[in-house]
Length: 127
Image (tube, rainbow, N blue to C red; front, side, top):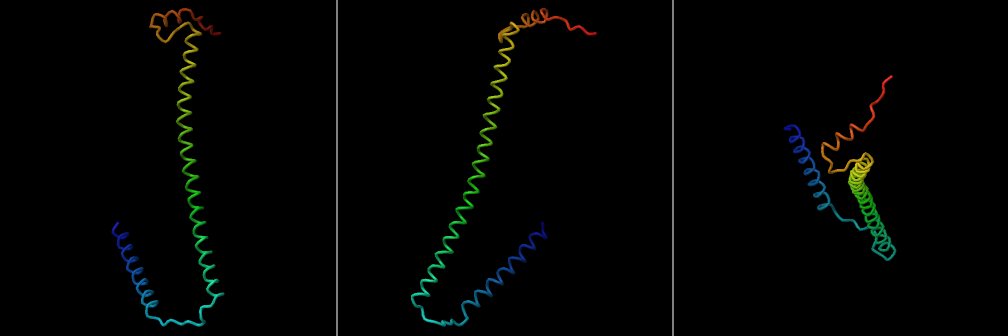
């Protein structure tokens, strides 16, 4: 843990030094304007900026679409799992009720009715 903290501090120091060096370089370097700003160069720069902005927006929309799709898929899987479990339990309950009716038992039947049902069963013949 100590090594990780130390490595983080060293990398933070290196990043701060590089940022400071770049900041000094861009602040104190002389500005050179080679050509005057005319209509075609201004249009070129404006279109380049619009292209970069449009690409950034398209990338953001793409990331949101992927995130939304994965979130919807996960939510749909959770809902389907819950509904399937509920329906399976209900189907099992219906089947148990059906079997109880077929065997002449009811859900309210006590141990005496169960004993009678066992007496009515035929013994299994083993060869």
